[in-house]
Image (tube, rainbow, N blue to C red; front, side, top):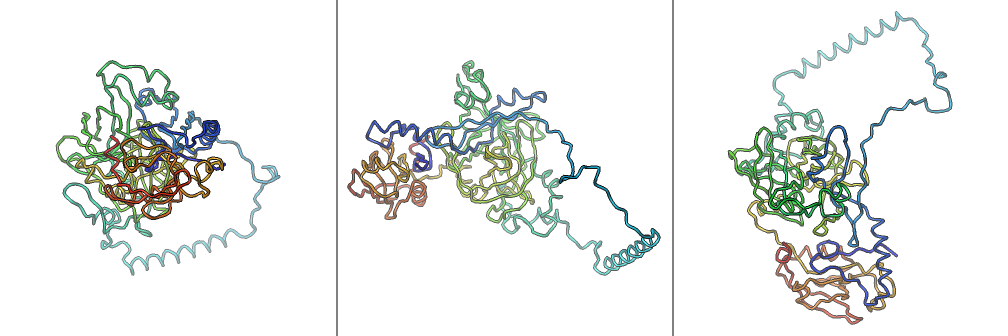
Length: 520
C-alpha cells in the first residue's frame, strides 16, 4: 500500500484543535491504520530547523565538542522521527598507495635524454618573446591605467535605497557573470561590510516549565534535567538564533520559530557592550517570519534586500549567523537549487515551506533567521532549515517571499491566510475496503478526517468521512492539489465544494475563512 499522509488544508499533519479521527467507520480497521502509521514514521525523511536551545550553548565546551541537531523532523501526521546524536570525530589521513597492482616502489620516472644547454637557450628565448608581447599589449590597451572602475565599487553601488532601510537593488544583477564581482575573492570585503548588521537573538521563558524542553525530541537531546520546573517568574533560556537589521531604526527580521514561545527576547549587536531587550511585532507562522524592534540610537547598520528571482543555480552565496554559539560565523557555498518544497513538524503542528532556496553553504544550529547574501552583500534569503539525511543541503526563504509581507510584519498586520478548517488525507492508497465503505471507486480526491468546530467547513455542513472531489468547479486530485487551489482564493470568497457522502454526490457552498481568526 502506498504511503499515506494526513494533512490539513494548509499542509499540516493532523489538527491540534480537534485531534485526529481515523478515516474508517469500522473499528476493525484500526490495526491497519496503526500499522500504516508505523510504516510512515519509519520511512519519513527529516528536515530540521536550525535555531537551537540555549541549553546546548550552556553545556558546550571545547573539551566535549558535539553536534546535536536541534529541531523537529519533517514527518507525516502519525508522528516524528528522532534524530541521532553524532559525536565529532577527528579524521586522520590514511597512508595510500598508487592505484593498481604495482607496489609503490615499482613506480619510477625515466629521465629524458638531451642536452641541458639547448633546453636553457630555448627557455630564455621563449621568455623574452613573452615579456615583450605583454609589455606591448599593456602599453597599447592601457591595462594599468586609472580609468577602470573597481569591482568592489561597482558591486556595492547602484542600489535603490529608501529611508526606512529596506532596499532592493533592482538595477544591479544578482550576480555579474564573468566579472570580478562573481569571484569568491571579494567575499571577505563583502562580509566585513555586512557583518555589523547581523545580530544574535536569545529567548527566555518565565513559565514554570518549558514547552520546548517538554517535547520528546528535546528530552532525547538534552535529558530530563532540562524539563524540571524552574522558579516562578525566573527567566529561563530556551533558544538562540540569528537575525539582521533591515531598518536603521532598530527593526530586525528573523524566523518565527526562533522566537516562538518566548516571553523575553534579547538581541546582541556587534560592537555594543550591552544586550537590547526586543519587542515582538508581526509574525507569520505559515511563512516562518517575524519582525522584532529594539530601541537604541536610531542608526543601526542595515542590510539591503536583493532579488532572489534573479539568482541562478551555481551563483555564490554566503551565510552569516551564530551557529552553536560562535558569533558571526561565515560559510560560503553556491545556490544548489530553487523552488524546493517540504514540510517540517513542530510542537504546534506542521509547516509547509514553498519556493525555498537550496544551498550547500553550511547552515548549523543557531543560523536560523540569519541572512543568505549574494556577492553584492544583498539579502537573497533567510536561513531556515537543513536536511538531516545529508550534508551540504540547507534551505532559505527567498527574499521575494519576504518582501511581499515585510510591511505587514513591521506594522503588526496579519497576512490573510485562506482556511477551510479541516484535516484530510489522500484517497489514493486507501484500502479497497475503505473505498467501498465510502462509496468511491476513483483514486482522486481527499477524505475529510476531522472538521474544526465553527470553522468554515463546519458551517457548511462538511463532515468527517466526506470525500472532496472538486473545489470551486475544478477537480481535486489530492491534498496538495486542494491546498494549491485554496491558496489561490481569498478569505471571504464564496466557493463551491463537490462531495461524495456515503456514495451520494452533493455540492455545498463554503465561505473561505482566514486562519488568523482561528489560530493564535
